[in-house]
Image 1 (cartoon, helix red, strand yellow):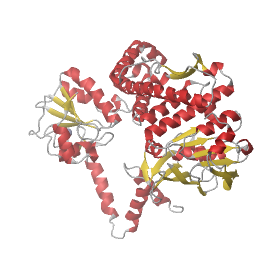
Image 2 (cartoon, rainbow over the protein chains, first blue to last red):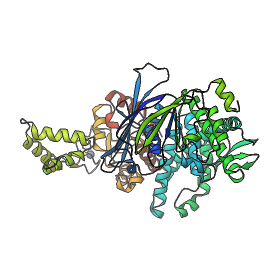
Image 3 (cartoon, each protein chain N blue to C red):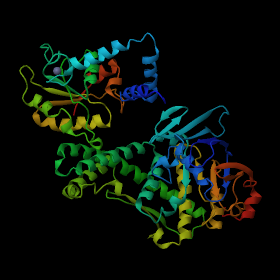
Image 4 (cartoon, rainbow over the protein chains, first blue to last red):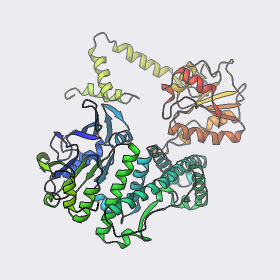
Length: 388
Length: 202
Ligand SMILES: [Zn+2]
């Protein structure tokens, strides 16, 4: 999948209009606050993903603009030049809309049309922060394997919202109505639980493989799912287990007026030699694992969608160990488009990146500045001294 | 629409109708006002008359001019069979299949806790009353839950099944052939006849 052009209108500080992207690596350089991250956010939104910067998409709209619009023209790698798909994102009057070839589509359709992995400032706390980000990352892996996971997640969250609302009515809710949403919760929860257990196993395998590529000194790396539900069983058994848990916590939940048990409390812990990585490893080592996790997500998405995903990496320089970053550049898959932003291009130019274009972002305007590297020729690889 | 406040009010009024977005509302407003042949008086009179003459049937809550409605007072309808629908338009859709010979009960919506719509906001109490203490000639034996096949309609059907089954009545659900997330009113008659024939007990 290859983005040919990106257009924005009324979006953050980006100049209205269209830019062409390189089919392989796009290195976007520029000082902070010029719009580099805005461009990656535009890619996240147009591909149906949540913004990694804000919960309020109205913030993406320019002052005085009636709406924020992003669109991309896409082509399958090696596809016919005329066989182009257009994806669109519009945010106007509080509502988000996604389009494909002019037709309104669900966000999942947009996401599947442009498989992508994002690595931004928000991900830096994935390993050490609260469970929500890790849960989201696990769900992305589950979606990569089986897109239907989205339906179960949505059904679970809907049932949970309905149940929470009824519980908040105190003693005045209708017990039969509550039972309906609890049954829906158990059914969807069982499906979510099974999908996450399967995704955990694949994600662990991929993280181990890529951590090794990146030269981590740790051995015995594992990804542990911490859950209220049992470690194995099919969706029905998991649903039954959740129902039993709900029965056991019934009066407690009514007092607390919220859901106290279920997959919405799941966590995933990355361990090395038995110890949770975030608690023991240095921040540099933790970041190596985050890069391994990113490559793992890319592999899973490439496997699930049978297409190389886009990688969007914000701030590809500061705070990353140059040796690990070099290994990461080496470990990038042979295919797929990459968008990197950097405020320190000199730190990036020597890395063994595939061929591409360098752009400069200044005051929301993107201008091509030069070409990047000569690709990963055998000589370059030898010179870079990468792990392979 | 600057300088056209009356036009803007018309567009806003049309936009409140189901299925009408801002674009269609503007197109309709232009048509109503700009087409010289358009008889606005006929439309407003028809609307006012329909509004004044129709009411909700005191038995089934369908739209009617006489109370009880034609179906509720028709002795040839099968009083043992009762179809529960979300709104009056859905009863009309089932009627067009000519397959259903029972009577109807209009709920007036579906359960939606997040929008604050609970059982008390729907015509549930008198549905249970119709089943529990039937009117002469009505002894309901089977309740067909024909709520929409979307999340809210499914939850409503499951809820009603829980309330109805203890009353010793057979409870069935329309299901086959209807796409998930669809609304009854968009189903064609053949599909609907098939889902009526293939209804299953829940
Ligand atoms: Zn009636």
